[in-house]
Image: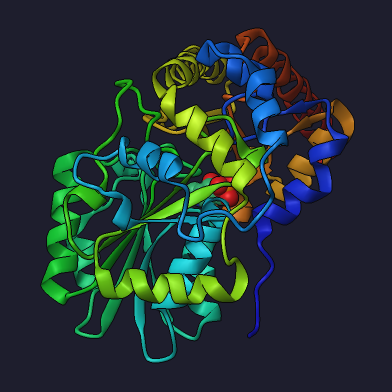
Amino acid sequence: MRIKDFAVEQWMNTWETRCRFNVAETCCDSLSIDDLFELGGASASEFLGELAGRRLTYGHIEGSPEFLSGVCSLYRTVGPEHVVPTHGAAGANMLVLSTLCGPGDHVVAVMPTYQQLYSIPEMCGAEVSALHLDPADRYHVDVDRLMALCRPDTSVICINNPNNPTGALLSTEELESIVEVARSVGAWLVCDEVYRPLNAAGEYQESVADLYGRAVCTSSMSKAWSLAGIRLGWVVCKDDDLRRRLLSHRDYDLISCSMLDEAVGAFALAHKDALIERSRRIVRDNRAVLMDWVAGEEHLSVVEPEGGTTALVYYDYPMDSYEFCTRLVQEEGALVTPGDCFEEPRSMRIGYAYSADPSGLREGLEAVSRFCRTVEGELQAGVRA
Ligand SMILES: Cc1ncc(COP(=O)(O)O)c(C=O)c1O
């Protein structure tokens, strides 16, 4: 299988541990085990003591009942028999798309989005048509254009709600219209919902798993739950046959998820209200900081994010986004992600939820401002064309 480099992950791998301000981070400020148990009002040492005595077997192959029930509590109509635990949402997307896509398949995927959603189908030999999301539509899906891209052999439609990198959030009505398109061509609707609990209204956005029998949703404990370190995600799939195929694929590369991870994930989801209140507060406060900052920067523009933890900020300097972002991290220590990782030139993706204290974000954005002044000085001095 020929694989394409995963641009955003390679960028993060190169710089993540070498920056002062990680304004590229997409998780809500990560938690330690101690933080998690403090938020849940329980004793971490009791929990760890109990874990220490457990025999480390493969555990429940199809997921521990406690973790599955925590996942189900995030949906209206999902039961434990619909959930397949995975290694993060990255593992969930890989599992789903490599199971569903192969030569002869036609896939429609939104763009920009997390690269897995179009590169995995391509790797698997499918033909992929990109549905370009337009800032003039606030990066929402234009259902007529989606319909126009679909063909009788379209087997999968990939969306991401809320969207990384744009922060666009599709409403229930919009999701229903997309479901109608998928239904009309008999396609699976794959929706990466890893940021779903984070929206401007402070609600759980509707999941397509609750709207369509051929929906396949992916998610994880990483972003909204601040627990990327447990590397635990899941697929929701209500179709019995597809679920069996997913489990069969998973036997080859996973067998089961870590019982330690599932125990932590189950605890977190059993205390989901306390955790999500914290994450929503971070996102709300920091989004305001981000929007104030962009408003004060003459050369920057953004479509206000409606959900998730990221925004795509455009600059009007005549400068390639990799050059812009590399110099920014080298000269000012602030890491953002080049828009070209998402095929969006002259832009940068900002992750605005990385610090629970908004002053942490302010410091990172001030570093970006200092670099903007440097570039403007160079342009004025004619150092740059
Ligand atoms: C949209 C999207 N899906 C999936 C992932 C992978 O997340 P995880 O840490 O759960 O593997 C990311 C990570 O950035 C993401 O932004």
